[in-house]
Length: 426
Image (cartoon, rainbow, N blue to C red; front, top):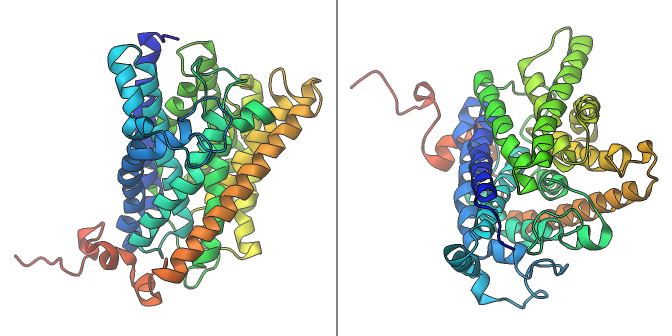
């Protein structure tokens, strides 16, 4: 099937928007941590961009999208049936130069998904992780967890974009996931929980232990993430059509709904809404609408946002009750928001929702997707992180953690005034 150049151009623009999300995440995470950990935090995002970008070109796309539409566990034929022509994107590069450029644009688009998903996990281990260990984890996690899971959902056949067409979770189970609620949000959130448990709590872990060191930096990050998310969701239609427009509108509706309820709860509980709270609400709404943006009307997207703003607000508080240190609330926002958004399709999805009279079947299918991806990601990430911790060590020493990891891990600091090498002399 030959695709139009208009849709190819649309997808390339969306891919650039999604790639911009990773620097946005670096700003968002960087502003939330201590001033002495900003470089370390941002480097984990930029390190993911560089490393996963390389791996994606070499073999990541082949693992996720080789043998398209087969429903196999890996994109390759079986587990070890590697088709060398798919490595380095060779097959689709030739196709792009000779006939149809759309598959190469699709590979570019999906590569940006892989990059941002890996980077998301880093927020759970802020202030205390070795950069080298993180990079090893990122490479292994992408290979063992992300690439297979992406194939389970997004491994379309040559007709690209049909709801009934994709990897085995879509093709055989019937899971609906428009833009990656399972692949991106649940996989990263469940893995973040696993890594946080392996690495352990920060020194002196308690509620309110560190205020965000730079609120404007956080809000810049939120703005960039939201901007890129329009490409993330609308681009997942793989065509510039009415469904892409619906996804775009819903990517506006859900975050504003979540901002409203998150801010209201803060006002009710603490006397005033905060900018960090509104930013967190926006991210929670974006997370929840990711799987469902093509299956909801705008009114139900607003409702989803309002619901997830409440649910994620209280989910974030659970880490203090349950005693795990998810530093930047990857679990409370991405895992919980991804679960809510994925299940919401089975309740209120147009043509599918239980509450709209279409029965419980789709809700059950959505629950299977949540459980399969969540358990696979959690167990795999825990094993990888545990092996790294037991061999090279995942965590810096307590002395380095207390002092701040930037100088130790990277030999630089975010602000000249905090660098002991800096002075007014000379």
